[in-house]
Length: 129
Image (cartoon, rainbow, N blue to C red):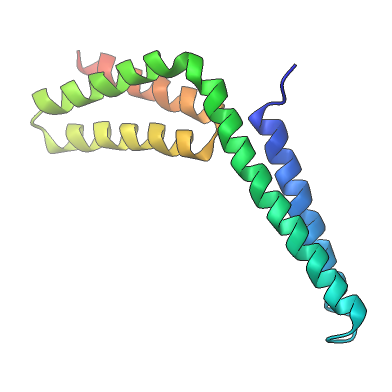
């Protein structure tokens, strides 16, 4: 079973927590000592690994979302069509906000948030229909 984006994000948080702990230890050793320099290298390696894992988590999230791409695209098209038909500014802003919520959830790599944003967008569109 492939690892999920949520599981990778847990690893990201753990690597970053380790980096923070190393930095805290580094703060109490003599400045520019061998241990201080070594701890600095370890912190940088942990931070770098955390960043790489974060990229992996985003990639995994996008892979998880791929089967739902057509549904997401359909909602975005519906939002675009609705913007073209709607003239009330409040309505347009609600629709734009809904589209932004979908985009933000995708960029965040959070499948649950994407589905929640899609559901809200569908509700918004069905209320106006």
